[in-house]
Amino acid sequence: MILFAHSFFLAQDAKQREKMKPYAPLSTLLAAALVRRAGREVVLFDATFEAGPQAFIVALERLRPSGVVLMEDNFNFLTKMCTAVRRESALAMVRAARARGCRVAVNGPDAADHPELYLEAGAQVVVLGEGEEAVAETVACWERGEDPDAVAGLVLLGEDGRTQRTAPRRAMQNLDRLPPPAWDLVDVAAYRTAWTRAHGRFSWNIATSRGCPYACNWCAKPTFGRRYTVRSPGDVVREMARLKAEIAPDHLWFTDDILGLDVDWICDFADGVVAAGAAIPFSMQSRVNLMTERAVAALAAAGAREVWLGVETGSQKILDAMDKAATIEAARTATRVLKAHGVKACWFIQLGYPGETWEDLLATRDLIRQEGPQEVGVSVAYPLPGTTFHDRVAAQLGGQRNWKDTGDLAMLFQGTYDSAFYRKVRDVLHREVDTGRWDDAAWTVLEAQAVLHRSPAPSTLAVEA
Image 1 (cartoon, helix red, strand yellow):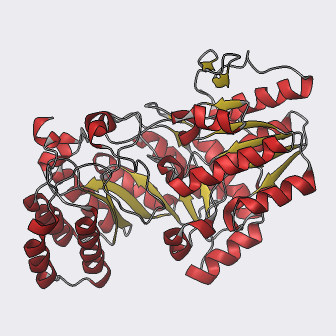
Image 2: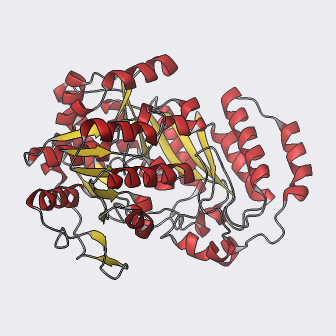
Image 3: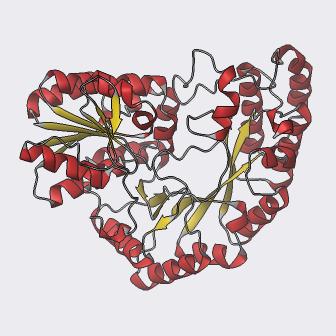
């Protein structure tokens, strides 16, 4: 028996508990389905609604699996962030499994960035990249009593105690050949109850593609890389039809970094959804330059109700420093096109990027006021390993290199202002969007406080970039 698991415990993240928008671990379920298709027995420890790693130990004692695959959900943006508490949970789970004689494989962004931590905790292999096929091959080696050192895409601990990598693995090109996620392993009722109690509707997750070809210098791509591999429209439509019949969600969240890079794909997808009667209202992510009239019309016909755009800032100077390959004018146009088709335009905003000034913050405020996104998600620049941004600020990073939890909003490098100030800016921006009322008095207070919260040596990398 192979026990699949992940390390996101909702109980350990106050912000996510308050939001109460839990999704089943999609990567975990895909890998489990692939291993099961090869004829092996699989079970799932879904950490989402458990209290902490002690519950995993109980599951180990009850199930006594021969192997454990700690497969994080690579489609969930919370996984990429890897908070300190999540890492602690993951390492505790690895130690517990190893202490009970289980062979252990780990896959996820944090393990890819820091494989030595997981190998030292007791994992035999760290699986790099998207993981499903490498996990399946590793499990097959375990079943045959072989070491998986011939499996491509792994990090192992050598006899000398140093990490060693097997041959690189080529990314999957035909995503249609993956089996459907193993939804039957999940307590669907628990997710339905959590969602309906908090929001009056039940949302489920789905992915159509892997990767993003754009080169925003703060965006980490440890799992899928700078590629864009997409399922066929027909395969996605079939999954939506199955979801409608088997899970019956009221809403879908498309986890893709970008849903529909190509407008022809979007149109074929929309036509297929309509023809199959598979439409389910959905939310998605995209870019401002992709929200053309034709694309938005097709998305709306397919069921799009909400599109999240990485607008980031109201300052073109900061956008250019981010290598965003986007313009403020494109953000305006995309927002207006979405609204014209009855689709909510929601923005991701990023505060604190190096070189951002008070005037840049005001430009962000003014852009939000002028275009009126229906919702905003506000964060601060987060230096993730493997990014150009991280390399530029590495010398400024101290002992804390990860947020404790997703509500931390801590500045991990020397931005223009400190963490407390950006939290205040976030709160004012949220309040203005949520109420639809401008709070000039709050901004006057913020301007007066800005001097007190200014960092002693703020980075000016945006100007230099």
